[in-house]
Image (cartoon, rainbow, N blue to C red; front, side):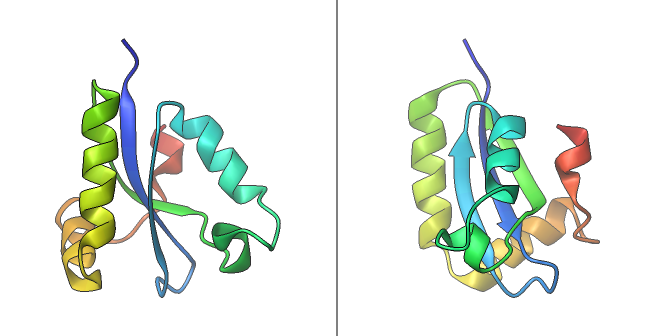
Length: 94
């Protein structure tokens, strides 16, 4: 059973938040960083991992991703601040 990741990315100014999920987060982060300008993360330079959580089950990850996508911006900011108040890039921990 693989670990599933739900994550939030941002740009350098923290003006854009992107929520996603993956079972291979390191590989997915590389894909985001190499995206072309016609993708959302490429267009807005959203490459900084500021939050992630794990679960064992794909269905739970998908459900959580959908939940976070529906949240308003302030709730997402509060979630990030709760675990990463300095908004450091957490990709080095993956």
